[in-house]
Length: 505
Image (cartoon, rainbow, N blue to C red; front, side, top):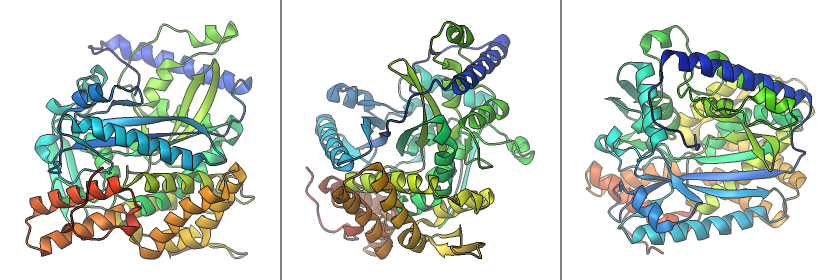
């Protein structure tokens, strides 16, 4: 959805033409796969982080256009709402001191962006959901002034045909409605990209699906929305409900939501693209002039523009991505599971854990997805979102007898997944110092049972105990979070409470 699209109305023939172009794109993809035209292994990874803008008072600032003008860097872009930005880090080769380099790049970029934002009385907050967001902040008038967001909102609203219903029952319950998709903008995430060969794609995607729940349990950072304490990671239910094109009748019929974990393990990347065409109507039926099959006949590489655009409107938590770089096509797995934050070292530790464990799981002789029912992987994801670091997950038993057992997420990570992650990082050629620093952060989170969500909740309740009302407690928690985020120590070291001032800078 980063592509520029022009706002406009679509007539009845546009969707039929677009569907035909999608089928051509799918046939073109099949030919590229059959002819083995894809890029050779390069061990490339990429990173995107969605950010919030807030003032020193902890309240959201609707001014991304002004902040972007100050930043004046193509690394930073708009996101859905005026209080959002996104930072994109250039692809890196996995190996050596890659995580140390990534951490330094991120610290430099975010510190610079925060300084420039400060010139217009705003600041950068890297968090899953900004706790101080109110319902009046998440309305269509606060969408970023970019055609594609207005057009996407209009098409999703038209497809649904009625208000969106938000109903999240967690520690507390939130029930409300929205007339636009703007509540989706509350969800700010980290997106981890991994370029893979077609032969490796299915194994990597399956491994990413299997480990998604553990990622969420470790990294949950979104416990509040509209003043209510909900799930420890409230982004997934909020994202699904705020983009749901299905009225209740279609939900009752089993029509799939556009924000989707999936329903089965796969054997090829093509299966996911085919599913996207088979199950999901076009939201943005914008046709490119390219004829992908003619381009292939002429020996060229097609952009598959319609396929790429359609794929961007199906919100899988692990998404297949087709791209062309330097005239050569490639495939990526885009992991969209994690919330943003809390600190740079936390983000980098989460990334290292993911890249390590996915490689190790993908190369196992008896892969976990042959032993774990997909229904359990999907249920694990929901459980991890609801309970965060306190979640209990279903996982295959080790040993000859097999079967499925239920285990604390922190024990699963410490006893089984962390050793796999270390082996996977070794296989990537990551330096031991980088490996040990990053995985040490994960191990300490597990030992202390502390992540961003648990810290936010504990600090909020401490503020309530000190006599603040809910609104003031959420604002104080956000200010304290922002200060500690910029100091940069990992979240498991943060003191609970809002009483001690933290210097910014």
